[in-house]
Length: 423
Image (tube, rainbow, N blue to C red; front, side, top):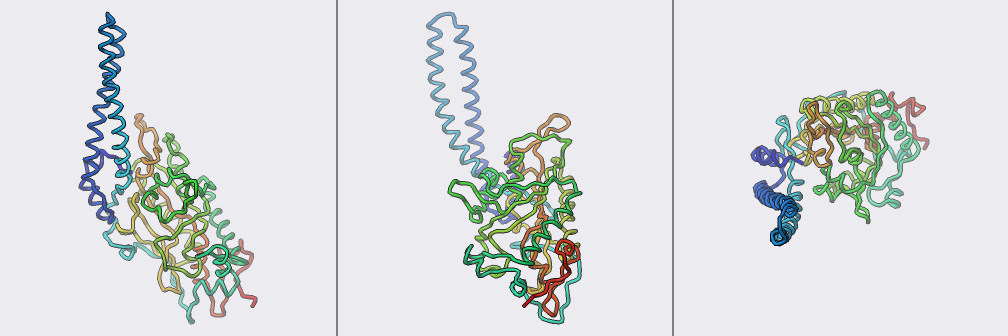
């Protein structure tokens, strides 16, 4: 959430940012409502001050008649104050509803664009494999080697359901140990966080109210998270942190759930786009300095790139255009690994920073050297999501005889160098 003072003083900048993100918001209506809020708050403050002064006057009144006059007047003030406070509650409800819809202002380096097709490549790594045969899709390869069962997955879990088995399960476990080992000495606090999370953390991180259709909701009004970011960001909600402890870095794990409501008809085969998966997430809190956010954004992006390099997966990094940014993101990179069967790159990681957009909503602050309370800045980036990454690993490492070469980084965890079908 942006500061209302910033919105009022920089309305044109906020409006231009919303336009760049293709988000409609009526800032004039918000400012007009804020004028009402400020005017009514001034009246409420005035009447409260009058009540305080009257209490002193009653105590010092010299006769009963004078006291009764003051008390009678205060009864009128009390009733007027009650009505004004009730009116304020209605205004605040509408005001908060509009405030949480105002998008963060994207960085100047974010390109214009209407969709993810307009994201701009900024670098690439690795050589795309050249096959002397028509490469199979991950869907075929996992079935061929009895690593997955989609039919029984759908029978048990419905659309996009799946079972991983044999080397499919073993490779996911290998990847989990691999990524845990690689983050062990990077200064991150490892955490296993809840997937079932209260509404406040979803509103705070910006997933509600805008993305409600993509969330699973319980009968008790809680939600299942699609990323460990949500619970991790809620960890310090309504707390004041020590500046000397910043930056705080978390390596958070949770099962994840997404309805994929806007993806009907996309990636319906295999395990690339599924409702239930696991994810390790980098989540950072730092000082309220743009330069620090930028530095850490590059750092966590590099962390993810090094994992893909060690797995020998060709990839590129794109900077997301305005229309492909979320409500709170200032800037976002997508890292996409090569998918031979589709002859294009597909997303494996997303890396974003938010300034104080999330922490203002979640009320996470620190005290600066001069004693000023400031909202920390927040960042996040996928460390590794499974089982999606299996799709690129098996496709890029398939051989002409149908076998799959296991990336060297995973061989010690898998206990072998290749996967061969026993059929």
